[in-house]
Image 1 (cartoon, rainbow, N blue to C red):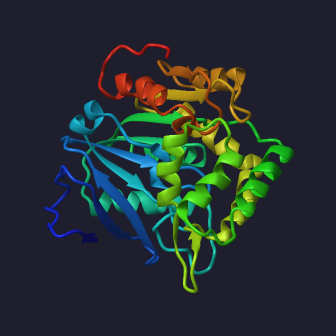
Image 2: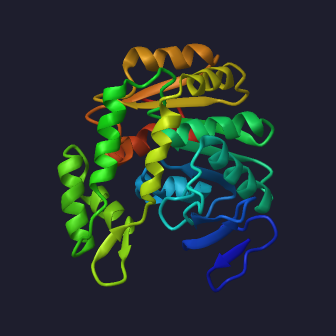
Length: 300
């Protein structure tokens, strides 16, 4: 494991007040980027969704960053992580990368939150490491098979972003056309971390176009069955978060999930769609902070 910062990382993980970039090598040598921030003694791992990166979680409030050392992961092929040389993007590889991260950082216990595809990955990590995962937050997680027309729409939006932009602000303007419900400040912060300068001028999205192959995985009904099985055996507290206007996770679908996990709690964020953290960032953190900080949960 490498730490791209001027202070060394102690054995295990020493929380730092400033953000730093960790570089973890997966079992097959693929380099995984992790942004570490927060001052707390407890660890919170954040796993983003399809086509995004660790900055999709937005800025966490001081009560969370003072309680937790946060690790925002860029999945392989996303953000500042290495692209898979064989374009082998599957959930089992993403899960393997996270277990590698946990082992290299010698994490005895941690909480984990995942959004959409990242929620499925976080759930499977929790089932593989039941003695280490203390709490699990699933955001916009669905165990029903997503309709083909919805997946086609997601793929079309994903593909449309692969062009050259004059500036990060131009990419932000593009995202605003795709996500009209998003909070402008949160989306701008995300956009500026989602592109990089390209040789020859301009900016390009920090994401492998071959991730489109993941839609085959997302269409596989067997994956939904695996998630149902994982939920039925979950051994840690669960919070399920949905956007009230989501086209991915319905109210009935959310109830199916909490029915599988005794004691599971759910909360809906009003005015948010599938991209809950970018649509309503303050309301999102208001929803999850009580669960992570052992406070009573209130419907925002």
